[in-house]
Length: 73
Ligand code: SF4
Image (cartoon, rainbow, N blue to C red):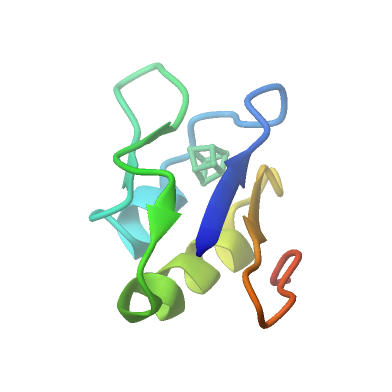
């Protein structure tokens, strides 16, 4: 199962992740990202890859399953 990892020390609350994958990421006003769930289905993967790619703080990573994904940049 694919899992999302967040480095809250790096997160600056830009909410780009929420724009790309609102089904996974929630960013409160003046807060840091919260995961709606930590494991993801393959159907969500494209949106999550975009969220990882466009996070300005590089705070997100995908920890992969059998496909060996570590992070997508
Ligand atoms: S885009 Fe990156 S820095 Fe912004 S809220 Fe999401 S994880 Fe945090």
